[in-house]
Amino acid sequence: MSFYKKHAPNFREHDRELPDTSHLEGMIARELEKDIPEEKWWEEVRRGKELGLEPADSIEDKTVFSTFQRGELPHWSGINTFLKAPYLEDVNKVGEYDAAIVGVPFDIGVTYRSGTRFGPQAMRRISSLYTTYNYELGVDLRESLALCDVGDIFCPSNITKAHDQIAKGVAHIMDQGTMPIIMGGDHSIGYPCVRGVAECVEGNVGIIHLDRHVDTQEKDMDEIMHTCPWFHATNMPNVPPKNLVQIGIGGWQVPRPGVKAGRDMECTVMTVQDVEKMGIQDTIDMALEVAWKGASAVYLSFDIDSVDAGFVPGTGWPEPGGLLPREALAIMRGVAAEGVAAMEVVEVAPPYDVSDITALLGVRSIVDVLATMVKHDRLGGKLK
Ligand SMILES: [Mn+2]
Image (spheres, protein in one colour):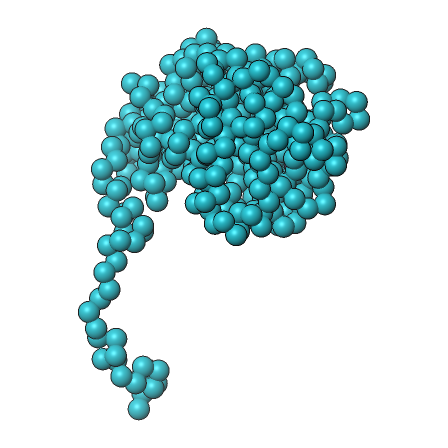
């Protein structure tokens, strides 16, 4: 008897009717792709040839080639804005876009490892690894979202002055009706970012905050460090602490002064074990209920260290036992489906990163939130 027959002695056991696979996300998503337009892609290709010249004669496939690269391809080369979105040098025109990426290269609010000042550039660089299309969601950001990169906020080495610059920059973007996507920077920037957002919102702002650390103490070593943003943010009249939800908190790096302040503020805290017990959907539902209660906007703050240290070596206070990347992403997508006014990704510190994996997760959180908001009609419409 030949070997393969020993391996499968009765092939007819598998000769049954095939199972129905049409309900699989994988199958549904494959169908979704056919309804996505590709106009903007071809526009980009045309622009590439116009500005970057027709390719050399020996190039056989002349459809996507230009002599000088002006578009997405090749992924490894080119000038890296976030996702190769247009660089908007004139910020007076930011209102023409649905969402604006803004870097906040600031890290003098750290209490251990520095390096998050390089976070925005690392995320921009590795964002070139991604296409603009997401399989499961069936969304192509290039086709459905006017996205720009406004570059970085000019941050001086003074916490108060830098915070004022950040609040002014974020408020400028919000004020033009554009969603700010903030790439930090250390977590002290959460305070000025929310300040900028809260200035532009009529009504209350809730905060959904993924972190291992509470970040709710008033001062740390006499300054408003990255352990302090929510104490100050929730002192603003339209940012009630009762609308602050913290997810992923726990472990051995939570300062007791912050816990004490959080107790007084009556914010909501969920540990990793809470998330595990409740499951992702109940976590999302509870977070949304609390953050949106009486609020007219929600701010999303993703501290990359909310994720287990094994996945995010490039951060200032890595801690084992955090969320899995897919849990953090699923929670953020669930939050984004209801719409968020602005989002920050903080504490990506490239000097300690390995193979860009920390920066890559930071990028992923942004594109997932953007695509989810597009999918649920919470964002978009300015694309011309
Ligand atoms: Mn943290």
